[in-house]
Image 1 (cartoon, rainbow, N blue to C red):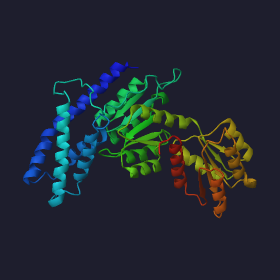
Image 2: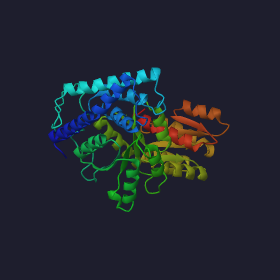
Image 3: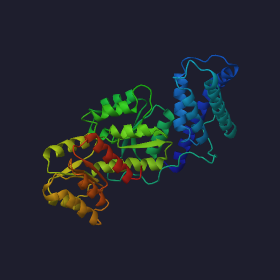
Image 4: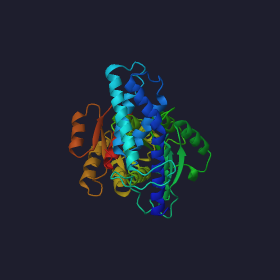
Length: 400
């Protein structure tokens, strides 16, 4: 593990490089501002510039520049390709104002920091400082191999920040700079020994080429990789991404900017949840098999209980991370299991999802009154059940 001073120096260097990126962008930004102010036509294709602005919106706050992150997000919206090339009137004024505020914020950073083209170290003096370093204690236990994370992000500064933090915790990592690169690396690792494959994939949503959702779909359709937990990185105020990611099989999501210590906990939580099973209590063999396969595709380990005694024993002896109780069991066994679990101090905290019969509205309501964390009725929509299970597990860990 790196010493704290080494870790801080590494972060300072990454932050310094980030500011140098801003230096390189300034000529284009100031020229564009001047053209807008003079009423001149702008280039039709601003894709590359918008991509760079998007990266800054996602990472500036992480490096200590909250205002710049917000202004970059506003400018990115103004650079929406749907607006071009017919940029006139109020839309031109709005773009000019957003660009002017962004340029002024960058200049303010230049004025407040002692960074030149030859600088290699930046002293952290701003109140909104760089992300706190992770705990000094390694997360990996001495008798276990180090955690191996694949980091997929098109922003090299975010990749460097993450891998620097992971190295400080004694973790291993593989970097991928795009969705295509990630798929290629996973293909190369397919023939490697299991201990050389990543334990978890941390992936940005918005990337050029195949985005995070497209890559997630490929991962979850692969027999080899579909059980590998995936955590999605997304910007704030992108709720649609959160829903889409969970529905697509993501284990969790993290919004940018992120805190390295909190992120490391999310990763270890995701890995721990892979070890504790989800219990399916059902006497319906077809439903049990369907649920086991669907949950396995999302990376969850499952156990099947076909009777009240078996389910109760498993709840006590091998506490699952969550239990799904099917009402299609003899003598209302599912309702009995529910009541027993919620009355027992050792099993009360286990989330329970109750599946009521098609005409069992009252049965479903009774299950909620008796402590079920969620309830659905037959005929069962498997995708809806999976989304609810994922949401409960995330809520259990304080993520939503």
